[in-house]
Length: 430
Ligand SMILES: Cc1cc2nc3c(=O)[nH]c(=O)nc-3n(C[C@H](O)[C@H](O)[C@H](O)COP(=O)(O)OP(=O)(O)OC[C@H]3O[C@@H](n4cnc5c(N)ncnc54)[C@H](O)[C@@H]3O)c2cc1C
Image 1 (cartoon, rainbow, N blue to C red):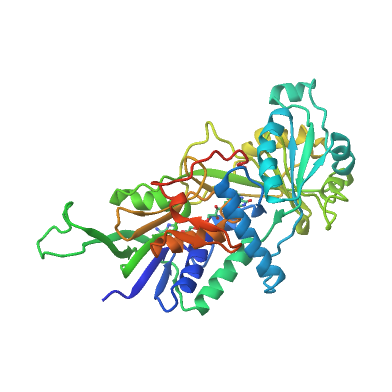
Image 2 (cartoon, rainbow, N blue to C red):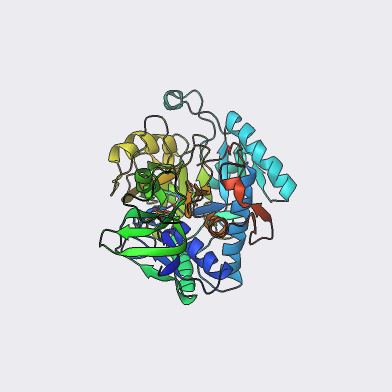
């Protein structure tokens, strides 16, 4: 007899949010979460910059982010759950071409009544000390940097602590009866025919076959009556390859370098006044897409940049940050606009993976009607969209066509699948 109704592989933010919502949508069902780590959120969730925003250009991202951020705000403001959610805002600094892309997002913002402010170069210089006029310098010439023509400040955005969000889903789902099994690495999927014939070599390709459970490196079997849900982040494609299932997602290394604001000039940038109620700098996205995430509790900026061409799709079990990447990429991209950080060296650094689908939108589907549900491709915004992705994944496991998100919007589950995938370019991927 199967021990469980549902087994979820992966206790990162996606597996945790899925377990939480599944336990609420189908109370009384037996749900197990299996993870090779020693506790919840030891994978890329713990490597995240965990910045959030509701400002995107594609309908999918607007829906998923809008509802998730509203839910997190509800948790913190009304339920008293401390997520260290700080609405410092996002400040997109735009050169001329970037401004054209941002205008697409602004059209949606107008439609949705989302607040934003356009800042002129003079105000940006005065409040943040950013160098807006760079063209003509040798450095800018080499880096292809252009003048900043405006800043777009989105107040409904900021930063949170992903481990606190993970803890909320973990503790609440445990209270609802979900069982967690750590230090359990899934090695295989158990495939069985729905109508066994008792012939050796089953299941044959022509048989109606289901995924009946998983087998771990410790030799334990977790058998299911209903569904196995794979939410293994960057590991997902490699886990599924042996059984011929494509997750349509692949990992790319991403790195963060924590740079302390030490000099008075650097502190003036980090503790910028008048841009939010905390008198701290917003999350800054430069025209070249390098970002600076304010972390005032460490007096630091976490700096990052998503390199594409030349960066392989590859999984490293323990990815290490590359000093050269800071020295020759992030440092020049930042200091061309913020000369205050010229020569600054990082005090800490770490690396993880983005789990990327081709259109950079999440992928949630049931493979071959087999009872195997895949939830992948969430990066680089899997934290800020996790709540809605968890709801959609639970709904796919329950074979629901639609789901109501936290903000009341109706979301078709097929939009994240393949038959009716809502493919729309997202211009504001970071
Ligand atoms: C540097 C960086 C910056 C980021 N910045 C942001 C940001 O600012 N905002 C934002 O919203 N998102 C950001 N992201 C993306 C976000 O962190 C991810 O989208 C999200 O954490 C993915 O969650 P997950 O649950 O899918 O994956 P993970 O957290 O990696 O969880 C997957 C889990 O599966 C487990 N697992 C894997 N294989 C097996 C197996 N065989 N058996 C058992 N368990 C297994 C792993 O141990 C892991 O715990 C960032 C990511 C990185 C790397």
